[in-house]
Length: 451
Image (cartoon, rainbow, N blue to C red; front, side, top):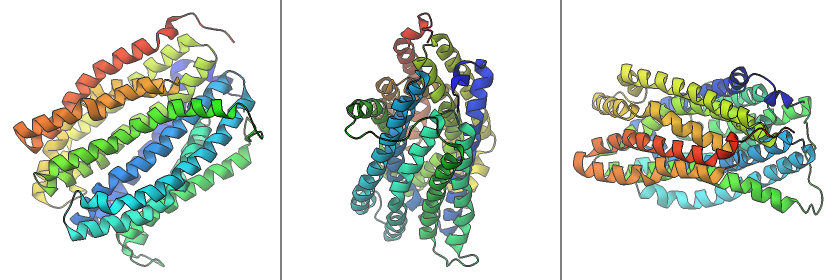
């Protein structure tokens, strides 16, 4: 239960040991996203389009619950690094309670809004029907999602990356196994179609949540997980968690806003482009979730060493993570240029859609490598508790730069302009991210504060 290894082990092996389990689990999560979409695509192209339209709302639920959990992670890691285990335990207990509440509110709000949301992007009765059938089931699991996410970040804050990996893998594997069984009616299951995909997703989240509870019971915790009655510090702890959690949630939710606006722009040209955008976002999870595994590995390291006053190690941890993320993005770029047709062919047999999608994927991939700078800087700032600075980077990537460019370029070059807006945005945002990170981490150039 000793977390001092986070400030004692050599930096590069430490970063790799923390990031590797999360990277592997993110790879499996990415595989789940692709497999899930593959099976839905076997129902019909309309089913895949419906899934693409529901995606922004699903992402919103994930954004709020994961974002707040990132705030919990940063606060716990800081207090563990400072040796204040009792305060870290109170923060964990508060985080669990609040994220369950977030999930309950999201369930009610999203279910009420879904019919009008979907109707704004399609006039197809079949797509609207399938979208509602999928959403009405998957959104009922928002509370288990909120709990699973906060359990994940608490576990990572303690440095238990292998435990986190195992629990995440359990949820993904359950989902992957249940998908074909429930969608197509294999074995004892009835054929449920798109509702089966939604139910498999929810059951997978519940399995992951249960796995964390079992692991905590077996392994014990390095901090007392309880709230003191009338604790006067509860308000301050909540404020610290939301200071990081709200910007982190907005960081993730901005992707929903981006996809929603781009769907509206692309729908004016053809529903085929909406499908291509949805497929791209499924495929890019394989790349960006892998990079996110590295970010998840360094967040507790950044927070712990910051709390312990080890500023030189903070700099070294960021440099190591940046190098690893750039390597991942380079591999993803090579893959997208080499076999885009095969990747698109997983989701549609339509030759025209595959050709248009392959061109889109090659165009967008031009910005993959340079986007690693923004990913590393944003994740490191969250680990340091500097959520507002991280938010500025995401605002540039998802709103401030890309939306005006996508609108303007689409007027000049049609749907092609939207794809070009992606890579141009990544180059501009990388420069902005580097300046923000340097300014926000001036303190790391001070001498270490030995604790």
